[in-house]
Amino acid sequence: MRQVRALVLRGILGLSLFFLSMPSLAQEAGERLAKQALEECHQGRLAPDRATRLAHFQQGQTLGERAVAADEGNADTHFSLFCNLGELLRIDGESFTSLFGLRRMMNELDRALEIDPVHIDALSAKGTLLVKLPGILGGDSEKGEQILQEVVSKAPRAVNARLALARVRCQHGRHEEAALLASDALAIAKKHNRIEFIPEAEAVLQQARSNAAKTTKEDRS
Picture 1: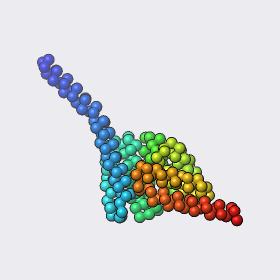
Picture 2: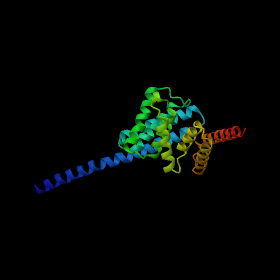
Picture 3: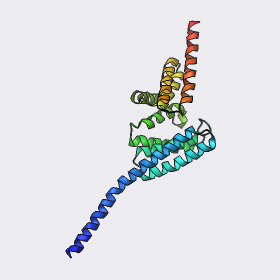
């Protein structure tokens, strides 16, 4: 009888340990899938043709959805899904043509920030979208600019936030500030091999310098 009780207790203890380990296993799976999804997003941005970009982003979406299912309470899983959803929406340009797709993308981004309010990549994306989207779609240029400024001050390697803020500065006629931000973004992109941002940073820097020179010339005349 004692042996039976001992076996039962061992079985109960074993099951308890098994179920206790399940959350950590799910978290590990979610983190792994999120990294894979973000890598697909990264590779899609680098791809030279639309078909390859589309394939990467679709695979990234699938991995991101699996990551969220495995660990819904992880900000990185939601951000990885957001990344690929966003790239799919703008695969043919910067305009967002699907209202449903936009809402789903924003829901994933907002969920990431709900879980981790200081998630730098999510904050950078949120600020960028707020300054880019019209008010009817949830845009808020002033709030977006504040978020981007916060990211730039806290994250020395935040390339996208610097480029987005540089564009805002140009819109406000602060071209020298824009040129400085774009120059920093270009240097960071080159230093850390963020080659997907280099052409964009060069274009923003050239435009900011051109605007600054034009303004200076007009002031002198």
